[in-house]
Image 1 (tube, each protein chain N blue to C red):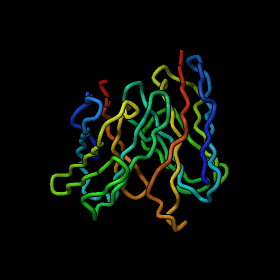
Image 2: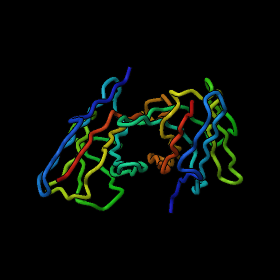
Image 3: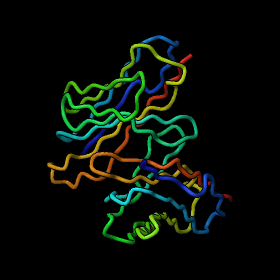
Image 4: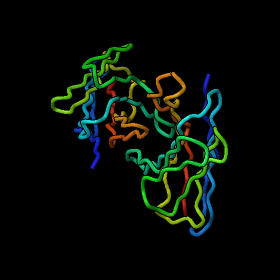
Length: 110
Length: 117
């Protein structure tokens, strides 16, 4: 069946360091991938996306990498800040459906 | 700009009581609409999605139902709640492919906390 999963449930990072959150997906037919940030008690917020015909996309302090050979997606956050503390989800889109992974909690240590 | 609203924000209901969560989207036409559920500390489970008025696709068999009586209105219902229905319910929308805007990103509302007691 379809599965989008994350390698690490919790990631602790020192403030100012770079963070890397990983995600594995199983559906090679997915054409679009998205990363979301969810703060406690709120709905997920869009961070960055990437189409399946790309392998890298950069935003402000964030970079998404897509490796279709091994079905792996990662989110890199540069110079991690306390405000980056949240749960991060990857999602894959196939036609109308968006399937989410279980999430990784990012803790930023002062 | 587009906005999405869902209510109520918090709900405490007894087992066996009915449920109605509402969601509306503004600033767009013919959106794709979604209901997700998130158990505490867990991921997002797709419950229903709709690509048009009266068109509902169910992803998980359960005692919940969804309806789309108007283009930008999506309702999640139950006739009799179970304890296992407790969770954080999220409504979301994405632009339709025919809108010409790409229709790829999905946007979420602020969620509704449901506690069944």
